[in-house]
Image: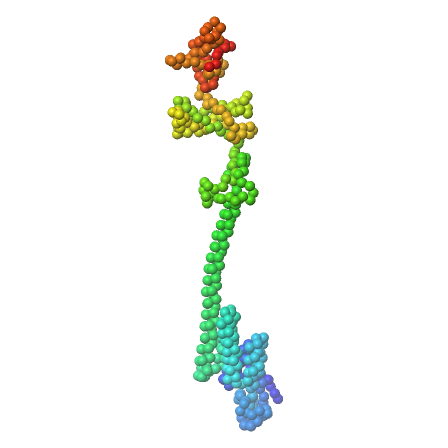
Length: 388
C-alpha cells in the first residue's frame, strides 16, 4: 500500500524539515511530499525503498510500526533566465548548492552592472544592481545565522541595494538638473522669440495715422537705418499727410497780434481757385515773436477743413484773419489812399480843370484788410479814384 500526502511548506517547517531538506527555489508555487510504508519492522536499519537510509529523512511512524520517507518535489514557474539557470543547476537537498547557485547569478549580474555603469548607462546599471541585490537576498534565505557565509552574502546584498539606490538618486538629481537646464533653455528661447517678434515688428512699417502718402523717399531694396539707432539721422522712408484738414502758416504784425485769438474766423484764397474762398479758423498762435528789418511778427496757423481734397500740400495761399466784418459798405483800394503829414487820409479823383488833371478829396475811412478799405464819407458809389 502506498498512501500519498500533500504537505504545505508550513507543515514541513512544523515537522522540523526546513534545515534538513532541500531549500525551496524562488517562485515555487507547489510543493508535495510522498510517504511510503516499509512494513511492520518499524525503525529497522537497512535498505529501504532501494535507497540508503542515510539519505532519507525520518518521518512519523505509520500504523503497524512502519517508517516514512519524505521526498521533495519542486515546481517552478518563471521565464527569468537567471532563475531558470539556478533551477537547472541546483542540487537537491543541498543548502550549499542553493547558496552557491544564487550567489553565482548574483555575481554575474553585479559584473554586468559594473560594466554598464562604467559605460555611463546608468539606467541599465541600476536594473542589474537591483537584480544582483535580489539574488544575493535569495542566497541568504535559508542559511542559518551562524553560517560563515551568511554575513558576507548579506553585506553583498546590502551593497547592491545601496548602489541601485544611489543610481536612482543620481538619476533623480540628474533629472532635476536637466529640468533646470531645460527650463533655462525655454526661457532663453522665449526671450529669443520675443526679440525676433520685435525685429519683425520693426521690419513692418505701420502708418501712425490715416491719410495719403505724400512722398516716398526710398525704393524697394534700398538700405535703411532705424530711428532707434540713428535718431534724427535715420532714413526718411516716406511722408504721410492727413489732407482732410490743411493749414496756412502766416505772420501777423505785433500791432495786430493782440486782436488775434484761438478759434477766430479766417478767410483763405489760393491761386488755383481765384473766385472761391475757403473758411478756416486760428488753431495756433506762436508765443515767441521774430524780428526782421526792425519789424516783429508772430507766426499764426489757420486750419481749413478740406473734405473734398481740393486744397493740396504746398499750395500758395493768402489768409485773412477776420478782426471785424461789415457788410454793404463802400470800399476803395488801399493803394488809392493818400496820407498827409498828420496822417489824415484823402483820395485823388480825376478833374480836368485841376492842376495835373486831378484833385484831392478829404475822406473818412473805416476798417481795412490791407487791400481794401472802408470809405465812410467823402465820395459816393461809382466815383473814380486815382491809384497811387
